[in-house]
Length: 188
Length: 430
Image (cartoon, rainbow over all chains, first blue to last red; front, side, top):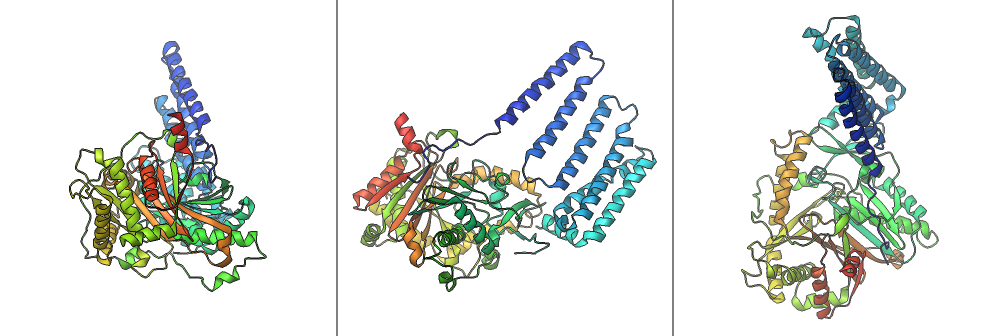
């Protein structure tokens, strides 16, 4: 006999699928309760935004071998979108998401990447492409300022300065790795 | 290897390899398997040691695949390979994230060692070289008193990872691809994604004797038996006009000088029309196969096929298309492209094992993954006095396999059957 007698059927991610279904049911239930009880306050939309955020993070995190810089990038994008969404649901009264939250998120992301660069510069080639994307995303406050969508406040300027400093640091520290990462990612 | 940066070298995919990760999914795994049935029970820890040692010699396999903006590329994999007891159907899709990022998977069961290889990594020839090294190393670790690596050193060849397609293709060669769609073997599929594997272990001396009688090579003869079996069991009832098209992969190292461990294969496609050409007896089919082989298996024809494929990969309008768009376009076009082949038959030929090592091996097997359109695929390899012809199938009926077996038996060839039992269960249920 050269094969096992009963070959197991492929294990599916059943638990994840069940939990996703439960989350979807909860989201619908919250929306219905919200509509029936307090339709003037969109609290269900806020809760459902949180559910989507949690799932984005969970699905990414349960994948094995995920790059830590990839996590930083994902969190930067996911939290930024979540804050804008919450702000939008609350009718953009103060625009706190783009004035305050996103600049803070950008500063934290850049500082995290700078620490990663210094602490593990030998592995920097793995982080380089994420670093470049974070730096590019960090230019968002500059664009918003140029378009007069956000004021030239200290927080926005700080976010730009920190991201430029981070970029300069990675160029000084690991220019060769950055170049190599760009070459391998963009080869055609 | 392309470059080495802090131990993280990378290299581009060769011209054939580029297409596999773009077109592959759970249903189209583009995985092939090599198995060695040993004469003793496999020791998992020693096997793992053997794989780790082999990877040190063949670094082109110690890689993971990463997406670039335009194409995938290989990057050094720092992790250890996973060795598991066989628990899934052969040639299933390799989810590299669950396999420490490796693009091959080594498994074992009782006396058998398997390696499932994603085709981007290498072709049947490269896979055989790598697998043989694993088996050699395993046997040396198991029997250090009898077997030693020193005995093999004299025969060692230095391999590389060059893209031999780019080196050998002809820019001016015109395409010889047929525009006719093929007859598609239909039938009810096996449930739950199961794959049936039926191995027909054929006595080589008997087979050679019959081939000599017909003045045919082994590949020609087996191809003819295959076409005849399809004709008798399926095609005879077919009312359409599409031909039986048999795709036969060709090792390009036999035509061009190359020491690459990357892919370097092409294929020829035989187009049989038993009804139209009145080639409905075995003798006539074999005559057709022999003449079609003669016509298509020439350096000129092979170069045309190879060059046409290289030109697609180097097309200046295709290269700058972002990877995610390439995936969508290739997957859509492959729904059609796959309809141009009825069946694939890959014969990797003799697996040569040196000296005393032979005493520990019973036979080798080769398997290729069936697909939703090409529901049956065939492969074969030879070791010592046995040729193992394998049918991998996702069809519930095994009439073609049975006809193939019965025909060889009628020819007086000794033949023995091994299988993974998937179709035995279905037969019992019915």
